[in-house]
Length: 75
Image (cartoon, rainbow, N blue to C red; front, side, top):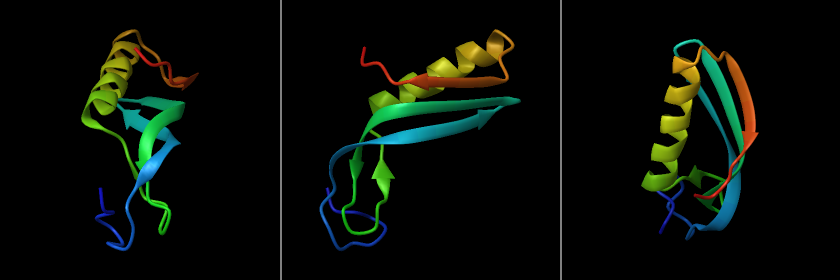
């Protein structure tokens, strides 16, 4: 896909770190699969991966977690 930010390059497979803040929770997930623009560095996480991250954040929030740092594991 062409980067929607710089509109100059096709994104390439890569990894990123995602930081989520939600209801008092700070969650950092390393090694998340993403599409990365080689020109500007913008990172895009697909819908399924984003849904998994949000579900995880919800579970941690419900359990009373405040800070969580983890490595992404594919389903």
